[in-house]
Length: 447
Image 1 (cartoon, rainbow, N blue to C red):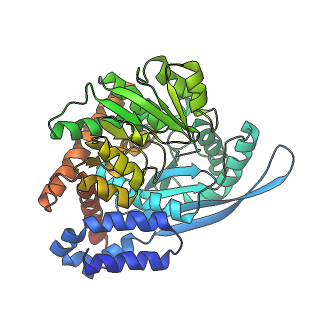
Image 2: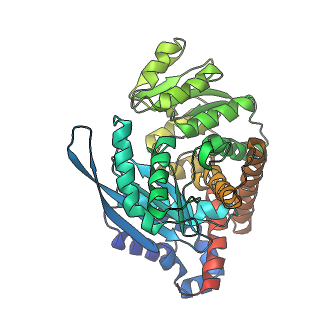
Image 3: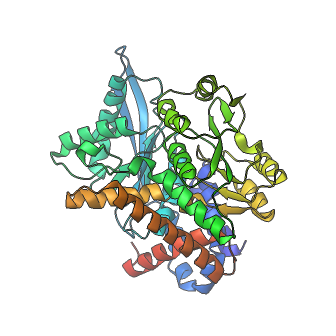
């Protein structure tokens, strides 16, 4: 690691103490950019990296609401608007008990490069709250969302910042948030994405992230002379991303053999397909224990409580749950089982230590900022649909999504090759995403 990169990493750590997730993503991205900074000293002279790692705006606010027992509850809300060089801030809202500024900053920083890779006019941002919707009534979720939006609305807009959903923010939450926004501004406009089809949502958006991951994985395998058809795939999670990933994998002839939840993981050698994929839709709303009900419904499946699926032998691994779910011991187990391909579905699901170990042992990695960009790409398509006020058909959306994911793969591969990394998609995605943002920032001056 060069001195200039070390310097910027230390700046980020000093300015953001106690935020390891943010430090992790800064280190992972900047390490790839060393040859770019050597080739473009003007970026260093303009303080571009120092500006890039500092959010343009960070908003923290109190969210006060009343539960069903009449008791006042207080949560914290956040929105970090990281970079608008390419367009309005774009990124999801996450409602989960572990949300704090470090997680929102990590997600927002990653979003800059992910959004850049799509080739669409969207900047990077992220937000959320430490509110956990699990176990809450619809009325409680509505009251929380209304209070959250009563503060957030003044900081967002269709040409300023367009939030979407994330963990804990699905169709129900987006509906309540949008209803309150519309009430406050007295306008019907495309300020949130992931909306219901009845009020401006995009056909195919729910499965878009999962579909995009599989399109990217297919490109990755093809570049290595292999076909995704017939491959055994271990995936984690049980939400929208896992559902869409499993659906498209089956559609392309692969075989999904695992899913997971907070209670453990399922190994289903018969394959998670057909009605089993449909059952994931029911499990999404079931709360924290999802694997035990799956094993009861499909008795040929094996339930491993409290464990993760990374010790299972598979041809392709796709983590779709949350950040840092693959650690060094998991990486060692995967390599011991002959792992050749990892395609990241969740945001930063692999620790830097595990990522380095996997790549040093010959594993081809599809990084999350590239592989799961299909979700935000379709969010941008929804923004365009809202602006035109003309709905799109699902087939149109799928076609655009596949084209975008193919382009993301090819641009990451080309950037890696140009800067001496060979077929290293992790470095390539960082470089390709960065270069477009850097060009725009340089053109717009010191802002």
